[in-house]
Length: 92
Ligand code: FES
Image 1 (tube, rainbow, N blue to C red):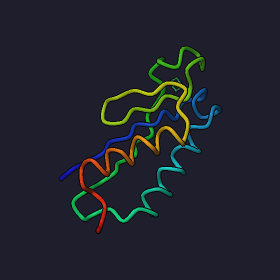
Image 2 (image 1 turned 135 degrees about the vertical axis):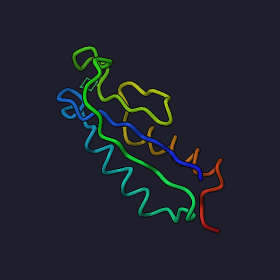
Image 3 (image 1 turned 45 degrees about the horizontal axis):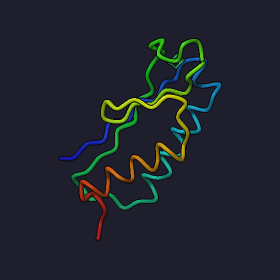
C-alpha cells in the first residue's frame, strides 16, 4: 500500500510562518483528489527539531523523509501530487 508520510512542523516558528496553512492545503488536496483505496497520505504535525534555526528556515516539512525548508503550500502540494501520480494513486 503506497503511503505518503508528510511531517509538518507545528513548532512556534513554523506555525508563525504558515505550517498550519500547509496542513490545511494538504487536507484540501486529499479531499479533492480521488485517491485509490490502497493509497494513503498521512499528515503528522511534529514538534520543533531545531532545523528551523530559530525560524530562519521555517516552515519545515518532510515528505517521505525528504526535507523542505521554507516550505510553502504550492511546493508541498506539487511534490505530493507528483508522488501520487508516480504511485498510480489516482482513481481513473
Ligand atoms: S519551529 Fe519548526 S523546526 Fe523549529
